[in-house]
Length: 510
Image 1: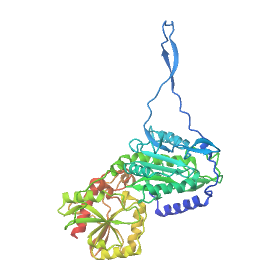
Image 2: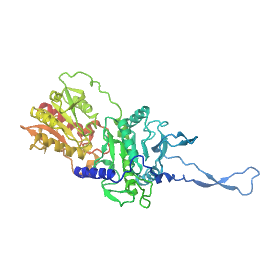
Image 3: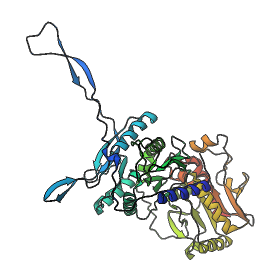
Image 4: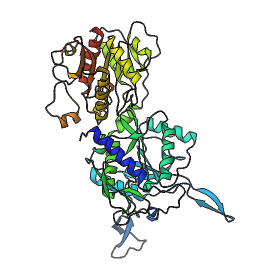
């Protein structure tokens, strides 16, 4: 499953170039979407023969009749967002028109396909932002697609959508026919819903591309051109380690027969490939349900606002690569440290920019992330000075993300030069106090990929015999949070906590 970040960067460049270059028509150009002419399939009528009892007098032979039997409806998983019709007056006549035209054939076919492949029994329902309860336990996934500009969302709707996402819901959007009119408006709406979190391309290692089907290539076409193969492309906004908003600027095309009937002016995935990607989105959303709801629960740490008095407070480094995917990790770990060591710790965390002089008041810095990132020259210089002065940097890749791992190694090389990361030997003091650690347990995902791995794989940079940088490519912080993220490539919770205690004990005593 794991793919090189170089491949991902190339993929992102190719897809971005294709989406821009392959003729997205100018805004305002008239566009007739043939998908809009395809109605949803009629619901099948379930009929069964039954004995009927007519009024007296009773004939010698009972009559038979056919009657409809209502089957219990399967639970709803996806809510397809529709916008209320709006009244317009044209040539002196008042009529109702769709405020935002959309189609149901895509999601209908996707749900049928997903139910069959995943052996589940869910349905989609139509909903509107004015009537929906915004409760993710009612509808875990909201789905929005169209080819015209999205209607403007009210401040109230934006706030409710934001709360829905933090409570564990997922919002999926895609541009029918890859239309720029929808794409531009969707990006603006996403930025308004989660303004402080970036919408960016998923790297090829992301679990959405591998949760059921292992997708490394997809076929895409522009209008009547031949299909071309390229790596899959989705953009997302993360809450924690899960993509809470998933956006495709290329048509996912789950219901239109694009193979036999290409759409003029449309940028679309091959329908078979799009269905596979759709199944992956559904399966990953289902797997993340419990994690999403638990992560969104606000945790209050009673010492967060207390002044620090000779206590250990870990400062977390801010950077450009989704720096805060595990916000509950450090406070949870500090509780564990306080319970199992004599270290005087405070149950809070602070955040710092490496370019800020405040980093020097913290003996230990912590860093994690989910995506590629880059440090500025000033940040590199400051971190080098910090480490030279005796500070310790502890870092891990959240969920074992490959893009962050490779970015961390690249940026650290700018700081430490030839003094590269090396595996910490099992006889190191790091593994001796307060816990003696010789073997560890990993998450199911790691075991599936490396079944023989049972030793810790911590790496470090040593200066004058002491570890100044301590790093794990397998996630520690997901284990510290103890939220059971389904796609975590890391240490099992108990061993993640034990390793965390040893790491910070070492950092403070050496």
